[in-house]
Image (cartoon, rainbow, N blue to C red; front, top):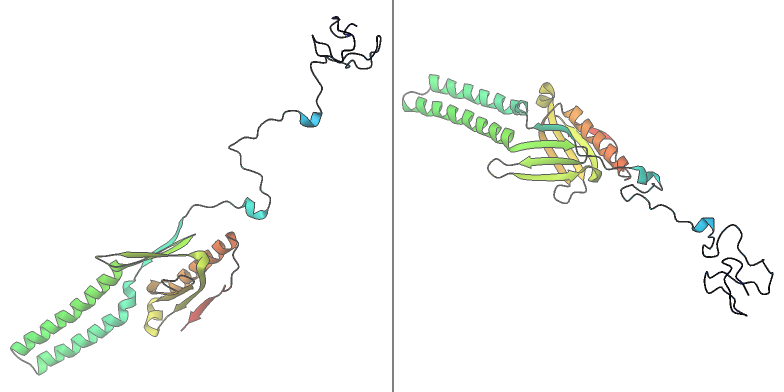
Length: 238
């Protein structure tokens, strides 16, 4: 028997050609087992099993939801501030009145050593006010970013704490009578932070716009991170 593909002699009763591996016909003259359009050594494969190119290892997988479309954004500073000297207007007025009283006492009722002591008292009053202002001005600072709120305290030893905006529940602001004259006030941040569940920020200039900026950043970050907003209003306490 001859192989119909390579024409080599094959032993009688063999099913496959020992030379090319082609399937032999069951009887002489049968050509139904010969593969059409190619050699038997190259079996045809289904189109579905053809080799596919490997995906690019650097390419990102296609997102399957809206959350997959979100990309983390870099941290940028939205506002920075510290204790405003305007917040000590009341202290300055008090020091001025006390100075006036001491001067009247020193000129009208005291002499010699007592006048010197009264002048020394006046200097101590203003020195105390100046040191207090310097400690607050240099020892308190705030920074708001699109992810965090940072607050730093201390002059010699500084402590910096931060609160994630997604943990902030509410933002309120308060102004006294004198503070309204110079447009300063205190911002209060209520959050889930264990260290500072209620953080008070005194001496903030343009307090209303700062409180609104913090609340706006809070809502934007919570929406971006997919967190439900429980409190969305900025309250004005007087």
